[in-house]
Length: 140
Image (tube, rainbow, N blue to C red):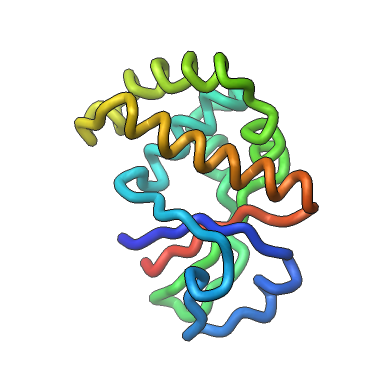
C-alpha cells in the first residue's frame, strides 16, 4: 500500500492524469506505516468524532480506474483542526495516539509519531493559509 500526502489546488486534482505521480509536481510526504485506519485514530483524537466518522474524513475525490490509483481529499474541518494545533497539544495527542490499537500494532517510537504529526500539521497549515487541498494519493 503506497500512500502519499500532498498539497494542491482542487482544480489541479481534477485535471490530473493516471500516469502523473504527485511527487513529481507537488510538495509530498509519505504516509509511511501510518495507514488509513491508523490516521483515522489520530483524526478522531483531533476532532472528537467517533472512529467510524473520522475514517470518512478522507473523502474519495478521484478514481482513475476501478483498481486505482485513487485520490482522497482531507475534509476541510479536519484540515483546519490539524492546522490550528499548538505544540503542547501535539505532544498530548501523540501520547494518546500511541495508545491506540492500530498504532500499538505498528510498534513505533513516539518520535515517529511526532515526526509524522508535525509534517502533516505543516502541510495542513500551508493548505489553510494558501486555500489549497490536502490530498492522499493511494495506489490501491
